[in-house]
Image 1: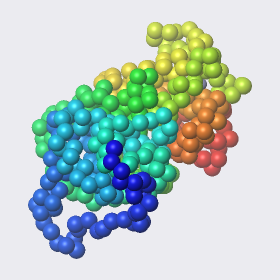
Image 2 (image 1 turned 60 degrees about the vertical axis):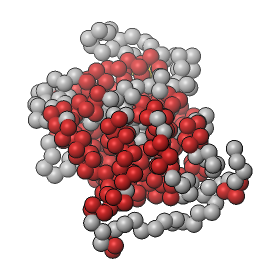
Image 3 (image 1 turned 180 degrees about the vertical axis):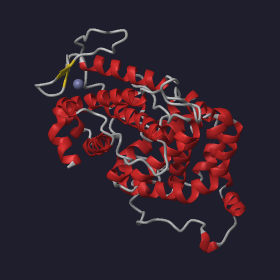
Length: 396
Ligand SMILES: [Zn+2]
């Protein structure tokens, strides 16, 4: 380690906002010049997407994060990454996803480490604690880079990639979901990679991806009531499908942060407060409801949902493939079951959520979930009873 301690706190020397208008209209540069300006960023993005087969969308976020690090003083990070073996870049990208989860407030920084990133940034301190402390600022900056630089400088690369696999764009995403690198920003940190499943991608190919983008964009506006509405002209089933995947991922992450606390000994039954207990039956392999521990129940439940999402006769992956007649019923069962995980989290693990500083995130996720299921009447009123007051306060 060298001794440049003048910047122990890398945010300390940094006025807000710290940079800089990006090359934009006022400079009147052409798209080609803009891309040239970002040529090494483009090179690194190609490594992520082509050489490492990482998710193109998430790779943009990863790159935005790295560009941001450069801007706050970690000079030549992108260039240095390009000199490293792909396997190391891959690890660094996984860690960037972890960092993004931290600044998004999805993950606590506690017990998390990013050894590869620290090694690459060796000439200056890098602290997840500081990252977490300044996370609102970081999110704002990274989002701005994403919007102003990455979308402009990298979108054509994504287009090329899309053209490369035109007939199986949906499965292109799907194929890589087993790799940690494809976990979204809302995916999991290393802590849970063994116990929890990777994020699922939006169904129905580019259409699903487009609707997913719509969800991300409307959520960004902060108005959840608007965000849940069927976008004008869109197919209702597509909308249900994309949201089902999205909510499954959210619950997966939230519950994933609790797997070390929600154990068979702490939670021997799947309860939602003293009055409600759930028993598991899927109606196929297990017909008669069985009493299982909460983690076992959650495992059955998430496995079952995942099997529905993976079933192409229910959630078609190909553009234009029809949805089954009972699609809404399946979706309703998925949402009914996801609700039970929320109910268990609120009743049995809320204190833990608070200590992990995840309660704002939990509340936002649940509010979104409650508004969506209310908008399309997806959950029967009786099912909502364990969280009735909370639901009423949200939908009133
Ligand atoms: Zn539990």
